[in-house]
Length: 430
Image 1 (spheres, rainbow, N blue to C red):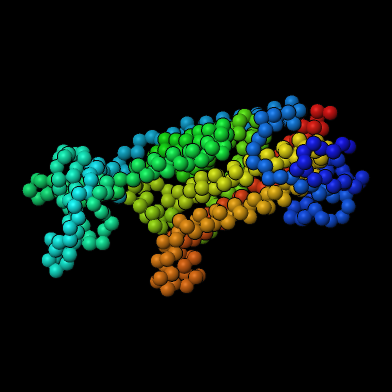
Image 2: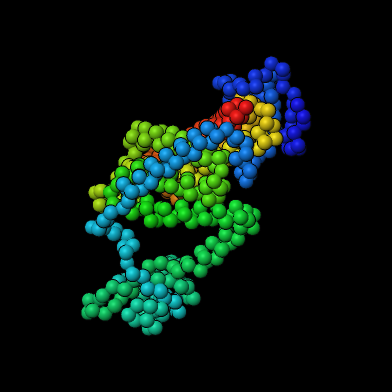
């Protein structure tokens, strides 16, 4: 057996008794390969990209055909789901936050402290502004605001107009204008992705744009139409996975393996999520979930919780599956003689390192989202048990734990599937 050309692969001679086609057994998972002779201990680098020639490793036509047929079947089912769940008429829904209002742009030109109109003993801030749109464009108007508001001279804001008692137009503060800094941040983000990722960065940005398009054009209108939230989430996740993976990594066999691994892991997340959303009696009517009550009786708040869990887990999930499949492919390219078990064990070690940081990232993301509420409840002096079992916090815990279990499961699922595809293809081709 010759030495592999890849310097990143550290080969240690396996004992003669090693089975060339062995499968990983229950003892292989979670055990470092420092044990008895006969166990290959192979170190591979952390890999996160597919080679353009990776299809050459799958030389068996039946294996390639089976993978692409399976992928095509899932794609057809996804397309059928999109057609069945395509949004219909959502008229009649209320607007509890006045999100359908017509804000008018304005520039703040003055800010003075004056007695409040409703109580002369209190002080308010009279904010003068010049309208940049609406019926009174170009005119200068004023509105009374609280003394501690954050509006300053020179700020760009939006105001809402409403008729007064005598038919005149009055104005209230609506929002700050944030378009320019957010656009600048978007440019910085795109530049960073393209600088490092180059053509793969272009694919990644295209996948991101497609994902946002799916959510805006399909997911949200479909949910508002009263369709089943879980089915909408599954179809959304499938469409996004197809677009994101194939746009970013190309139409390779390895991409198909990563895609199917992602679907298996998502199935586990959906099953666990459904069980524990019901077991913990989450209603979905907490914090922003309360606003769903104002949208109409056709919105399933509990289903929205599960839908958010599925879609929220997908972004990290496909990152893990792509990494694992890529690592298996690179190791097989460097060591074509390795069996399924010998491919599986060292790549699972890569997954352990990856998953430890990924799970922490997922928890911190949910904790950051719930931070204001955590501060509020802590200030109120509630016990830790009472705090964690409040629905507004419990829903984030369930999301984080279920999502993390799915991530952990995706490591052995994607690693074994990739290793099995490569070794099966090699065996059938000889």
